[in-house]
Amino acid sequence: MNRARTTRAAAILLGPFFVLFTLAMVVPIGYAVWLSLFTEKQSGLGFGGTETVFSGLDNYAAALGDRAFREGFGVLLGYCLFYIPLLLIGALALALLLDSALARARRFFQLALFLPHAVPGIIAALIWVYLYTPQLSPVISAMESGGIGFDFFSPEGALPSVVNIALWEWLGYNMVIFYAALQAIDRSVLEAATVDGAGAWRIALSIKVPLIRASVVMVALFTVIGSLQLFTEPLILNKGTGSAVSSTWTPNMYAYTAAFERNDYGLAAAASILLALTAALLSFVVTRFTGRKGRKA
Image: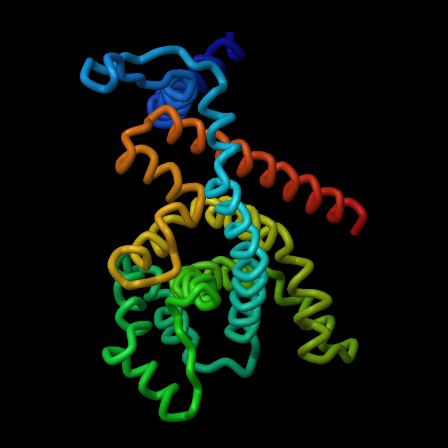
């Protein structure tokens, strides 16, 4: 009787979540998979109407066979190799600094570092486009006066430009996560290490960082998934700035262009599904690798 009552209570409490999850996740993904299996063809040399025909895996083959789509994954790879280490190391270093005994005005610096995250991504990208534009940007003027020349919109500068915007947006947010995890550490452990003669660097690297490993893994996982969804920042750079960022610079931009500029919704859905499978695979690899490393430790 008690078990049945517990099961009923759990079903009532979890029911709204599963309904929302189904409507917001399962149904859209299922629709995208269904949409990716069809394509629209015109009859009568283009003068007739369009008809939707079943194409099987042709859209997936078309996406994988498109050089622009494959090059988008190359851009993502470079972005991840550049952005993720900088974000994790930078956020962790700032959190450790705020948690140290030398830190002053912790609340002020927490708020100051977190504030960029409160700015919507589109607005942040527009601000940085202004700061990247010659003849407009005080940053460019200061760099040129110091003899430093760098074109943020060039093929060599496009990736660092996007990485810089993303770091500005997310560094403070992840720093707050790490700082909260550091605050949860039992202070007696740190005091014991101090009594044993451990210095500040040894305590930070050998005690604090291992104790917040779960938070580091979580941030790394979310950062990998978020990196694969790169869209807003390069899209703004692509619009009217003369940037080397093309309309198919990332897989997300490729899908957006296919859907809303070429009206090829089947190809866009197939590209989205391939990107989602890549994100799922990388998430699995990250969790398995970090889990195995944790068991060895």
